[in-house]
Amino acid sequence: MPFDTMITQTQNQNLNVAPTEVKPPIVVVMGHVDHGKTTILDAIRETEVAEGEAGGITQSIGAYETVHNGHKITFIDTPGHEAFFAMREHGVKVADVALLVVAADDGVRPQTEEVIKHILATKVPFIVVINKIDKSGAAVDKVKKELSEKGVLIEEWGGQVPVALVSARDKKGISELLDLILLVAEMEELKYDPAKTGEGYVIESHFDAKKGVVATIIVTDGVLRSGDLIVCGTSFGSIKMMEDDAGQVIKEVFPSKPVRVVGLAETTPMIGEKCAVVSSASTAEAIVVEHKKKHEEFLERIKIEPSGQPRVLTIVIKAAALGCLEALVSVLKQIKSDRVGLKLLKCDVGDIGQADVKKAETSGAKIVGFRVKAGKETLNYADQRGIEIKTFDIIYDFVEGVKIFMSRLLDPEVVKNEIGKIEILAVFKTEKTRMIVGGKIFSGKLKKGLKFEIQRKGALIGSGKITGLQKEKEPQDEVREGNEAGLQIESGVAVEVGDVLVGFDEENNTFSPFCRLT
Ligand code: GDP
Image 1 (cartoon, rainbow, N blue to C red):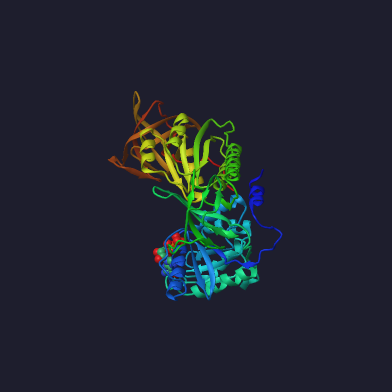
Image 2 (image 1 turned 60 degrees about the vertical axis):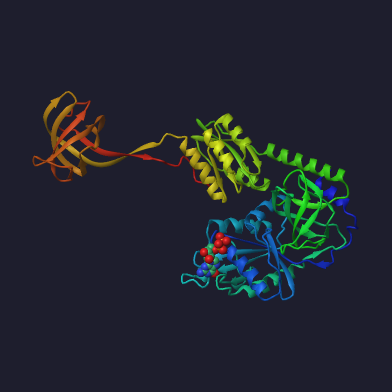
């Protein structure tokens, strides 16, 4: 039975009843690194606390709730980016509104573009937040133009996307931004059904030595209650305790409140995993089995195999969520090279552990992680076995990292750069491989120590090295075009009058063996 059907069947209310209550918006903040996401989240939290509308000292549970003009708003404050990305796998938008943060002095950057693609694909309503407008290099119009070039058309230019101008540092424009969020949310007519049992999504989870699995869940519909039996992906249990972002123990949670839940067992649920209340342990177990099967089938389906290239890079991929894996595999498949192929030995979700290192060791694979960690012990373990581990947070960097591993499998290509040419006018002395010759440099320059090729009547007949150089009988390190020079050379071929020596230096090119990624 499909997961969603099971969940629906366990809900103890009539689904024909339309949702009635207004649901506060859940907001995710995204944008390029250093464009001010954290500062904006802090500014909002501090402004509202200062206004006395939200009380208590907030703790970091991956999201917080604030109140603006009497209306609640929930902000996801873990790397919002990551949570949002992981949500995609379920095709659900936990976020009702996204903020696309762009620094006014830096404009659209690679991560901004990545975020724009996600936002446009999921069709989540969003607001462009142009931050750092206090900076002297701020160029608001330039940012707007860059955004329009990436398909983001703002209201002012006839589009639908509102823009907020903000200085998170000076806390300017924050209140207007919150007004705008509430306006966008109002237009979306966000509702929930108070008669339903609770459901939501995991936005953060970890294992606590004392409490066991601790997960932050944002309730998106219904009401979640202490004691409820819930399933989150492959993890389930009765809720033993719920705590809000102010550290208060609570018994009931309404949408869109983030809540830290203790009581899940077995595995730590993944970010983006759907949670729902179920009526019995047997239903919960059946859902977990179904989920595990789905995960395994999915991992079976994603394969990368080389296509006959002479060399092959084997990799193990670990990522924060199945949705990430899918995206990573699809971009890796776009890497085109005739010389190095790529083989996926294993991919899975979760942090990198010793089992991954053991697996990599069987085929000399590299381990690449995406938004996951490798603990100190794992790193030592890998180090002892000569297994390389690299972790990344941005898709672009991940792909570049894999490409560098691929390039390293190739012998560096030696590139010859022509430095100068001389026509031989006289041969003074020849003994075995050593000779003294003279001629006129007609292109570039010649230097002591330079290697050369010998051309006779246009054909390449040998090579050698300049061991000594003279101009007007004086030793020189280099002699330029237009001058006559005396050369002491070493060569396996006897140079003759009329030959041309072409001096060159060599460069080890750590080139890219790839066709451009599209
Ligand atoms: P994030 O990586 O997107 O979370 O960016 P941060 O919030 O960490 O901000 C990166 C840097 O920009 C920090 O040094 C902030 O102090 C600075 N910053 C953030 N907002 C502003 C702003 O409005 N004006 C100025 N001048 N600096 C800012």
